[in-house]
Length: 519
Ligand code: HXC
Image 1: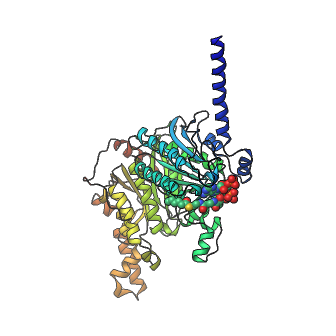
Image 2 (image 1 turned 60 degrees about the horizontal axis):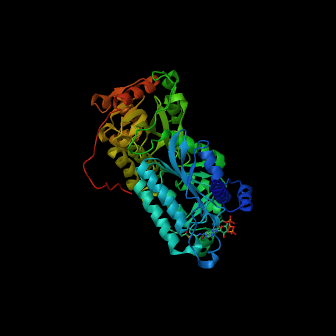
C-alpha cells in the first residue's frame, strides 16, 4: 500500500516538473511567438538550438521569476523572466550563452533577469569558456526602476572583468536600446541581423525631441549604420540563421580563454604549397591596385578566411585564417580601397583586432602595402594622431608571434606602424617588389630637388634616381630590418615555417597595472 502511494506521489512530482518545464519553455506564449516569427525573427530557444550542437544545451534558471509588485506586476510572472541562459557546445567545445526572450515583457531587464546573466558571466570567467549573448529586448524593465539599472551595472562589471579572459561575443537580433547597448559594446565582436535588428543609446522619438532630427530605427541604428558608418558592429547577416551559423564559424577560430592556445583543427592543405600566381599579383605600375584579399585566401589553409568588419575601414583587412590548422590573425592594407592608406577608421579597427589577438594568444600575420597616413583636415580634426597611435601602440605592446610581409609600398610612419622589425616584429619579410622609403619617389624628388621643379626632364631623372636608391627592399635588408627578401610564390611556406619556430616564443612587457593606450 505504502509502496503504491510513493509510486503515485513520485509520478505526480515528475509530471509536475515536466509541466513546469513546458510552461517555462512557452515563454510569453504561442501568440507572442507567432508575432516574433511574423517579424522574420526566431524565438530565443530556437536561436539557441541553431547556435549550439544538437542536444548540448543545458538550461539554468528556467524557473526564476521577477520579484516586482509594482504596477500590477505581482500577478504577471513568467518563469525564466525574459532571458534563457545556460551552457552548451559548439563543435564539441564548451560555451556559455544567454538569449533575450522578446516574448516575455519584451525581453526587458529586471533585477532577476540580470542575476541570471551575471551567474553565467561568472561561470564563463571561472571555467574558461566563451560567452555568447543574443540580444532582442526593450531595455530596462520600466516597472522595476532603479533595480533594473543596478542589474545592468552588475552585468557591465562582469563584461569588464571578463574582457581579455574569455572571448565575449554578441549577436543583435532585434531591438537593442538604452541599457542593452553597453554590454555588447564591451564584448569582443558584435554581429547584427539585417533589417530586423537595431542598436542605439536613445531611440528616434528622443532624438526628435532633443535634436529635431527625424530618423527611423534603421537609419539611426540598423545593421548597415553600424557595420559601415560607426564601426560598432563587425558583421551584418541576412537573417537569424546566417548570423548564428557564422557565429559558430567564428567560435571555431577562437581559444576558449586566455589560458589556452587557439584550437588546432585537421588541415589537408600542404604547408609547403607553392602558389605561382602570387608572382604576378603585384602589378608593374606601382599605382595600380590589386586585391590583397586574394593573397590572404591563397596563403590560408584551404582558402578559408573569416573576415571581421569587412565594410568598415575597408582600406585595412582584418581576418582570421588557419595555418597548419591553427588560428592566425591577419592584418593587411588593401590597395583596392583608398590605395590602402591608414586613416582613422582603419587604425581603430586594426588596433582593436591586434589587441584581441594578443590577448588570446593568436599569432599575427601582417601584409603591408601602405602609402602612408591619409592627409587632410577631416582626418586631423578627427584626431588621426591619437587613432593612428592606437595601432602603433597595439602592435608594439603585442607579445604574440608577429610575422610581417611587405608586398609593395611601406612608406613613412606607416612602415614603422605595420609590425615593423623596430616594434618587435619577429620575422619580417619583403617581396622583391617592396619599396621602403620615407615617401613615394615623386614626392621625395619634388622636395629634395625643389630647385628643378620647372624642369620636367631633370625631375624625371631625380625621380628615377630616388627610385633606384630606395624603391626596393634591399636597403632595408642590408640593415637587417628585413630578415629576408622572399619569392611571392613561397609566402605560405615561409610564413608557416616562421610561425613554427615562434610557437614557444616568450616575451613580456615591464610590470605595470595596465597601460595607457591613447583611447
Ligand atoms: C517592460 C516592456 C519594455 C520595457 C517592451 N515591453 N519594452 N516591458 N519594460 N522596457 C513589453 C511591452 O509592454 C509589450 O508587452 C511587449 O514588451 C512587446 O512590446 P511592443 O512595444 O508591443 O513591441 P514592438 O512594437 O515590437 O516595439 C519594441 C520596442 C518597444 C521598440 C522595444 O517595446 C519599446 O519602445 N519599448 C520601450 C523601450 C525603452 O524605452 N526602454 C527603456 C530604455 S532606458 P505586451 O504585454 O503588450 O506583449 C534604459 C536605461 C537603462 O534601458 C540604462 C542602464 C545604463
